[in-house]
Length: 443
Image (cartoon, rainbow, N blue to C red):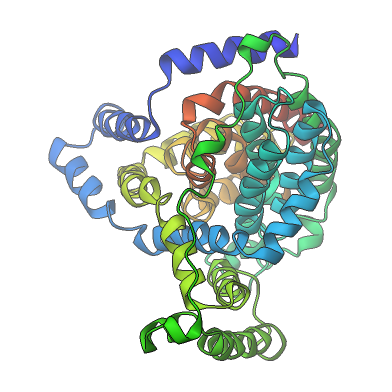
């Protein structure tokens, strides 16, 4: 049944789901129309909200570009490549390959979503390379790797649980400081996580095609080194070439970087956010590539995969601007809150967050819009605020399975389109939706 459903959704996706950029444009127009029809905003107001929001994600977009580039650069170093190959060799059959990719993504995303997204993307390619000729369906492997991203928002880098546990957060006057023991480390955080960890890999693996004609293996030509390497002796090198092939500068720069990393974590007591993650990846990449020439070559190769983020993120920023300033996101959240009870509010927070996330695919941005509404509703009817917040967190991660925003880095690395993985991701969406919905009611 899983295989039949997966095939059905995949055929639908291949026929009807356009390129991710087209998806972003369609969502932009849909949000524009909804703002005018539902919120009764004027045409020019919606134009203004779109334009004002268009560049609001520039900082985040640059962070994501660097997540992709520095992760890709690091993966091309000999030590990291050896680690990826060693893990990839654990899979001996297509079934084991799908299980491995899903489990690694779930665990690594739980630790840190940025690291999990890039590490598992690169691991999927290594698994596919290692399994070439063994009838491994590459699009399903990549979809399986992405499906584990479902748990990121209830992990150690989840933005909502961490934010409401931070002194001075914007809702502190209403809900105070909510410790992680009531969110990430509470039953509503770890029970769904554990169930997905032990069931989702088998759901994804169960969709692997049986018919050989339906199996698409990795195209190694797109990932192999084609340019011949010409080595020169030191006596043949110019002074500039000697600098390019010397480890002196990489060692000096990375030494300074390592000192700062130590300062950040042990002196400043800083956390693992996107900036420090990128910094760590960059410094390790510089050091492990050993020479500037090797690093530059890896950086040029990595830069080929970032165009989707550069072009598409501004459209999602425009959508977020229209959703928030027109009040459309608040209308959706308020509608769900209007008929909730203390028992059902966490569930409806989850569902409404899933809908809003399609238009506002940013955990922090979504909480800024939905948080005040849901917490006010929780306080008014006596629902547990921490559980409601976790409902929003789960919902924000839930519909990432059908929202290309977070899949762009993975798709860029894997050299696939969103339509190639969407059908399988729908199955992950349905399964996790059933599990999480039930648990939000009964826990």
